[in-house]
Image 1: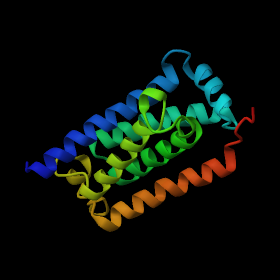
Image 2 (image 1 turned 120 degrees about the vertical axis):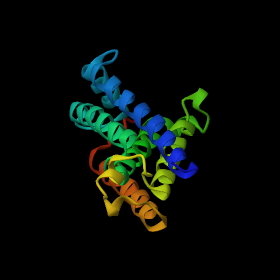
Image 3 (image 1 turned 90 degrees about the horizontal axis):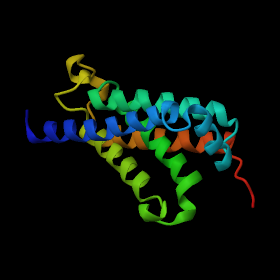
Image 4 (image 1 turned 60 degrees about the vertical axis):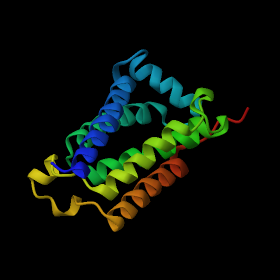
Length: 166
């Protein structure tokens, strides 16, 4: 394994397992789906329960897929879209720094997923084992992943986000 493949593996494992844990927490941690639903309702996501379940399942699935390098580019696009939605709905108004609940963390995760798309899944991945030629990474792939993530986030926000006006 060369250093680029090793770097891709480490990044995929850390970000993927972090996202999987985050999705698991949406579904089963603390207040479970009911607590996530209340939180999403407070953010203005409608219908809140649908978004709570889909975010939990989606983050769990995309995180695990990213970690093992299966459908790496679509998984990275999903994570980018999720981070954009989180950044807009929950963190943007708090500024940059994470210690103020700002968008520093979600921006970092999104950029790392764009870098994964640029690198590709690497040789230590299910995509490589399956010889999935469409998941090789590179500039055009990274651009497509970023645009897919941003596009999905924009559509979701336009269709379902109704921020509460204080």
